[in-house]
View 1 (cartoon, helix red, strand yellow):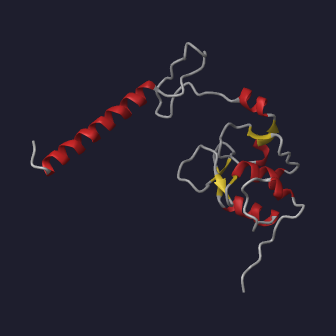
View 2: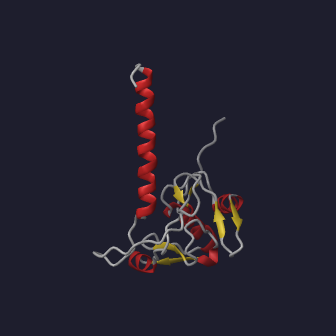
View 3: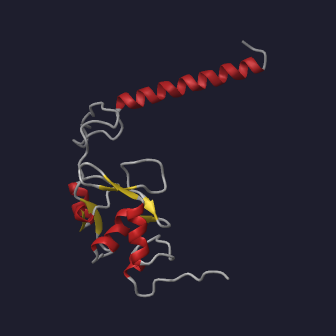
Length: 164
């Protein structure tokens, strides 16, 4: 006998875009807590679908984890506002670290790190006065690796056709 979807009706979960309709508030709370762990700095970090950490995570369908956590762990969700983490960790769902702010406030509070993820110092863009989005050193290294791979593929293809 097939299981019928529960549907949200007038539930607060209906305001969360992309959330699977099979969750209730209690099951979603348990699901989020099961997929997360506590770090040394007090953050409750969620493990979403992808392998990357330190970025916003999707869970329970296609819903953003921090928004779903705000709905079930904090309450009082307003879809017109953004959910922001005060700790700065994009994958944190700790209720005391979540708050709702306007889009302008969220953008204003965003901080660019002075180093890239590989530890290189970022350069200031003279046109905007902000840090460049792409690290020149990392970009140069990536292009060098790509050129080496391309050269190896060309050499392999030439060898397969009997050319040197």
